[in-house]
Image 1: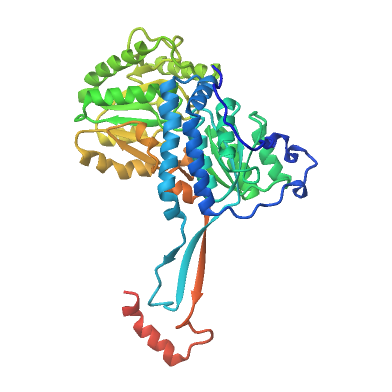
Image 2 (image 1 turned 135 degrees about the vertical axis):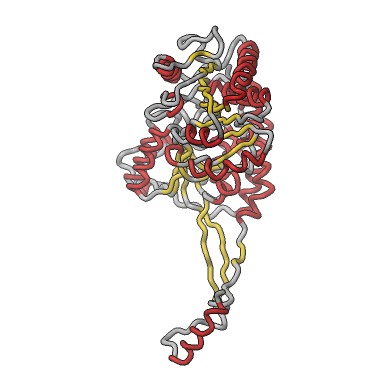
Length: 492
């Protein structure tokens, strides 16, 4: 399917950055366009309003482009990409001004009563976004909104797997008012990302921050490059998280939520659960309910979405095969499943050994609709299994007693979970105020939500000193002793 419409513009589009001199090995900083003046916040908010209208107007074209790029069902493209981006746009239109406005900082009345402080947010400078493909409009769109609202110039490297949808999204942003001095993009090729970073290393451009969403392996390369060049990064990397089902949970709610989350986008969602830890007393009831929901999902469509490539399919098959061929091997939830068939549909292995790579993801990981289910004794046992994997973005807990979930939050946080969902999976991650924060092999920095917006600005403190001032020279002994005597009531 092809894009059914294209945005209209009264101005001619600027060339993609791939045609720009920065990809010329002989280019230097002198060949770059001059730095534009700061983009005022009212103009940024006006751009966001126009951008929102453009997305709504061209929703069908965006949806068709997403389907053409990655093969999503239309309902998932609309809800998971377009609507989630629009919700983020609406939230930022309401709250960005308050988040970014200058504010007074409370005085230290007992130490520097004559010094007033003001905090204001300034742009980082030039932000590079290396875009991903699994939610091509949602993820790039929110990162773009936050980078531009922060007042930055932005260079986007679109994914080679989502060229239609991301080019259309970027053109809508351009037509809404983010001109070529503010927003540029490279060609959607695999080589364009390294070339963009190399352009900074050659001083052909200056990058002040890099946002990358993708695999841990690529994230490590970017982190090493950024450390060498002192460039800040936001790395949203792989998630291989847990859903914990306690013995007082609504079994059918848990089974349906987990099955739908694991099947969503053909399992290509970094917040989706990869292992399900079920308390033994309800293990049989849960697996029976899960089998029902898995069968329902399989029967829902005769043309399921396919995994992005054969390599992703092969990883799922290899990890399933390894989990089954152990002394206490796993088995398929339903007899019709096999490790080499229907790799693009949701498949579930039960009784998976705790040491299986499918559980620990110690040396490899998968990004597809394959889930491991295993029994646990209690909350402490669940946490022990959960900690064997170090890639956590959203952990789910199913229980009818919220206090049980609350008691686990601190331990889950210490294990690296950045989002903890009670009685739900994946869907709360679309809330526009929720930030995604990686930890360890799942990356670092916050994207989305208020902290994601603030992370794309620099805090600047302005001080103004009147009277009384601290002494500018040595303090007389008598006065110093008076100050010492007053410490107990000044700083109690």
